[in-house]
Image 1: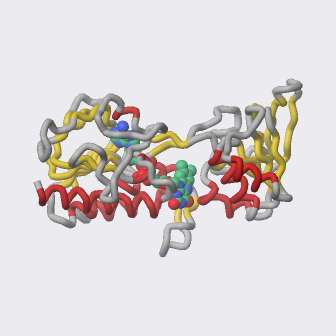
Image 2: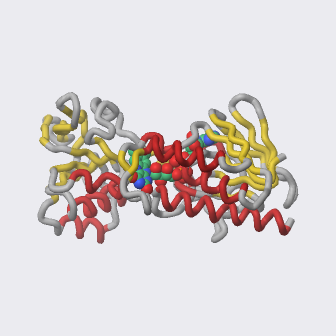
Image 3: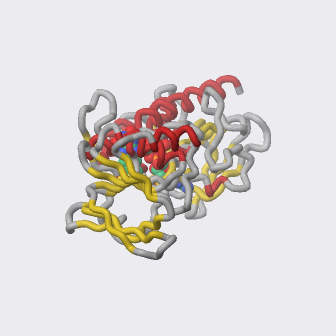
Length: 308
Ligand code: FAD
């Protein structure tokens, strides 16, 4: 059995593994795919102290750093079930899709999240070629350009307000007849001169010239008419889904959105089980934040071990 086992190999799991291993405790890391969302990212310009890097490069650097330490890395392992220890200080068990099981005194759940996709033609073809999901990450790439934000919930409206300060023009596209975002956000959005809002608009296609996005087609749900808007970028903001399906039925407490709730030391409602990164209720989902949270959870786990 391990002293501590990370489930997930994104920035949170990798940081947790390094912090744990540096305490000299036996450390494992099991991940469906080492690198997580970073592996799907092109340019990264907000990883402090590195002006500019690319996702796959950062993943390689993360992996090399983890391998500097005595960490048992088990890649391509998808966790499907968590069985918590029967008594405090006992062993937790994680079952994997392969049928294998691993036991550990403490766990750091760092299975991250995924952006919900709209599943229209053009979305996957032009991903990272004009189709984006993270305004904090990719907003500056569209400086002065015309972009659309799909989704009128809080994240969509926040993204549109944020982008309006950077890009030339923002078109917000909402499927329903009204936006669901908080009233104060809607008022702020409506006050901006370079934003227009389309309600009852169903995106049907993201168009491109073969190499980059050049527009978006939507159906007006009131008239059934089809329209096309020319633009250079599309931010899809219809939700970020935490990868916690495998924890259903476990006693780990989660929010209404399925995000894991933790205390200041990263511990969940189950003693000895910690969580970090995008899978938790942490409000902002970013690489530097996930790494910090991973370090915090590993130190929390170490603290738990020396007291039990
Ligand atoms: P993740 O990176 O999601 O990693 C989760 C890990 O858990 C993976 O290893 C995954 O395989 C594994 N996993 C999931 N389910 C299971 C399971 N059941 N069993 C075992 N393993 C499992 N942030 C920035 O700061 N700057 C940027 O420029 C930036 N650009 C982005 C661009 C894109 C396209 C995307 C998608 C995200 C971007 N982000 C950016 C956000 C950033 O990538 C995330 O905040 C960060 O990766 C979260 O780290 P994490 O370790 O919590 O989760």
